[in-house]
Image (tube, rainbow, N blue to C red):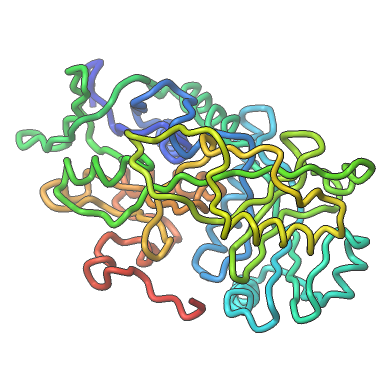
Amino acid sequence: MEYSADEFDVIVVGAGIMGSSTAYQTAKRDQKTLLLEQFDFLHHRGSSHGESRTIRATYPEDYYTPLVLESYKLWQEAESEIGYNVYFKAHHLDMAPANNKVLHAIVESCGKNSVPFRVMNRDQLDREFSGRVRIPEDWVAVATEHGGVIKPTKAVSMFQTLALQNGAVLRDNMEVKGVERDGVRGGVWVCTENGERFWGKKCVVTVGAWTTKLVKTVGGIELPMQPLEAAVCYWRIKEGHEGGFAIGGDFPTFASYGENYIYGTPSLEYPGLIKVAVHGGCPCDPDKRPWAPGNPLAPNTLTPLKKWIEGRFSGMVDSGGPVATQTQLCMYSTTPDEDFVIDFLGGEFGKDVVVGGGFSDHGFKLSPVVGRILADLALSGEAQGVELKHFRIARFQENPKGNVKDFL
């Protein structure tokens, strides 16, 4: 098929990690691809920038683990094509009270998906990490080899570069205001704020915290996604212990399930500092963020976090307070069940518009496979080897809370 300069096989709206990965996938398959971004490329106003994200295969929902295992392979494949690393390997550690339902579900998921794991009590864990990680007497820990850290901004740049090398057209500062059905020849028209129009056989929408607004404008559908602004906290490792908590050794990425869901990574981006934070955030409008300085953590969140650090790291990490707190580095949109939305928009668009969103603060690690799936849906109408029933838009019509989870 012959195209004019403004006609494409696939138009991807949103050049964060999901859109950039999707554009890489479609361009790699010899599809004429356009990637549009409303701000500058690699901007700091969304969910895809910053210095580190965790990758782990331990999920209480067993349908995520196969996606993570595929993502490990796809990360390494993209790295081999670009010639540098964005993924840094580490083991992973989950910890919780012995009767915690989430941890039990993680163990069941590991077994179902053939992910090797070890369960350790307090004494075993103490020996494993020479006292650097400790848990209460009535807690247990689950260790796997499937952990690691990803460099976010570098990863987005990687996928954009690979998309460009495979023939994609990349345009930033192109805010999309609408998508219209072409009733004459099929396909869609993507319309931007500055008046430009692009025709595509297919369109993929991956606009992060702006998903709810754009999907409502385009398809009239109210998606229950709430943008949240979260705090990323860094804590100082005490002098003489820095090497024991650094990436590249035996210190793992980690998650703790209890009254709060606490997660963290080995020291990587800032020497001598370790990232430890609480999952969750404050509701925000992505177009009206406060950009306020200071620590946004409420005392009822910061106090338990300080106590957790004091009890876990044997005094080797200063628990007096974070030395750096960055709200500008983390905004994400969450669904009621914290599962993704990966589906066709439907309605008048049928299968011509695909939506990926609601990645709920745990999607970055999966961006290579999400990009593969979104490309599959756009190009063939189905995703190869993946069951997507948990990610349907219609689930919220059946139950406003989405997927029911036995471990909650």
